[in-house]
Length: 316
Image (cartoon, rainbow, N blue to C red; front, side, top):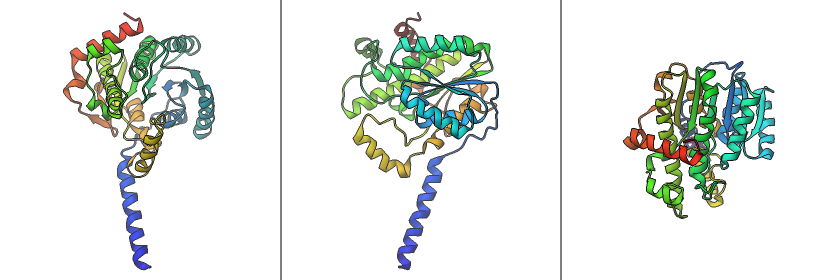
């Protein structure tokens, strides 16, 4: 019996140690946001909701930009309760529809006087097409946020110093942008196998990093800064469209993945940390600056992606 107790104690200690390491660093900023307004896309669940809770707790007016009214209603109640703030509101945003993105931006600009932080958090990991016929992951993870950011840039500039934070992924390391493929299929990839889907997702996350790289160049001389980030491996609902994968990740994630609160920390760091203004356009992970490979900071590729994105959005 004593041996079993000893083994159980050792296993429990190992579990606690692994969880502590996996949880990573925390955002230590004490910045308060009274009088500030923040938009968080995809904030009805996962790290988006945790991000919204923290920002509301700091006094910000938080706009939950979500696709599902039903899910957002539940999230709204949770965020208000956990943050003890009633200064939280829902505005419908479907990133798979450019019409919806434009409608959201128009409504926001008419009804809200400020925008201090835009957090492009929403993301999908599934095949499909947007309302405009783009590949779903390219269309939602990149194009939807590209259009939203551009439509709100003037307000961000007016309210500077302000920030744009875009949630990418370490998966961007496996991305490669083939513009001929994009031209032919309206997506940076094709196929439905597990690896095909993973590559297409990785390509969309590379777009996030390159978008931020180019955006920083275009924002020089303004008081708007921007950052992309890897939140960590998260026990969230990103794989909800793949039931088997979701169950596998649930088992593995109990030990090796961050919970959503820990997963929100680098987003919060990029949104709040003082002294990183000079690092605009850079990529962060575990609440710190991280180097990226040459493709993810290629000026020519970033510029071409921006120009192609303008065409897809009708901004050119």
